[in-house]
Length: 165
Image (tube, rainbow, N blue to C red; front, top):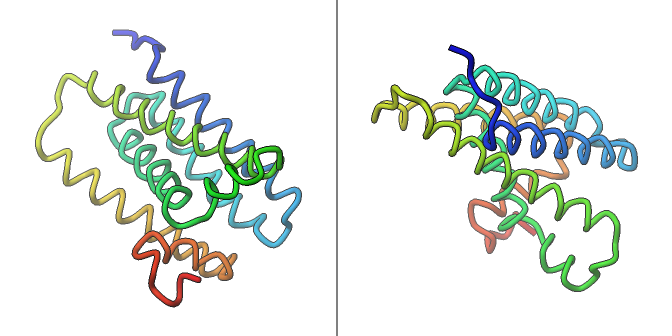
């Protein structure tokens, strides 16, 4: 049986690819986070490839990493407040578009997962395991490669904790 390349696959591929492009643009202007962005891009490449193979693990990974970064942008950073205050700043526009790209990946992975014929309640455990592992990997990579950005991640846990400023 040949699997069709439908809307979910387009959302995952285009959203993930745009986010990788945004990481590349950011890395070009902020050299101290280049290696962190290489690590992040590698996760997105893995998620795209696995999703295009219709692997539930790819859906878990795509939803986890894109969902995590959407949450970081929404709660742990001042992105949207700054974008409203300065809508013409190219770096903020790029970050806003990257957030939309991540949202496309999350939506695409959910739609693709729903098409799987053999979904079970145990899939929740797989998703949670991948989310915890991917998040731990990203936090560790951030701590090693760009520790000054850990405050953004801590802000997701609780935006009013003193070490999140």
